[in-house]
Image (cartoon, rainbow, N blue to C red; front, side, top):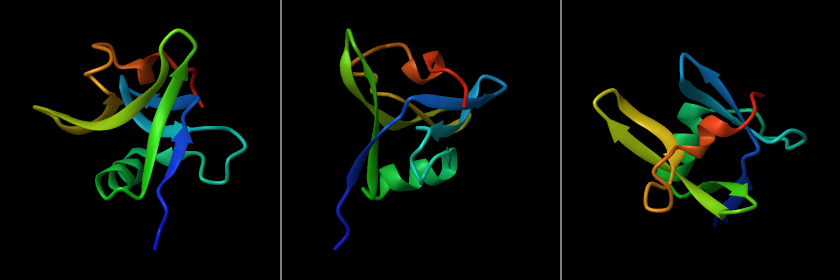
Length: 89
């Protein structure tokens, strides 16, 4: 049985305004490309979150728009994708 691990995201890799990888330097899984992170979230393999001092831990979700699936912070918590605010990895 696999145990789902919560992984903190401290950096992101972006290309053309799109998040293409999640990072946490020093972790063996980092960087993790977007497609693999989406698979982990959708199949409950791992969960991911960002931690902002004034907001606390905020889950990263798989969201969808007219361009397809993408990673973003939980829209029930914040209407701004906080992944965009993280430094580049």
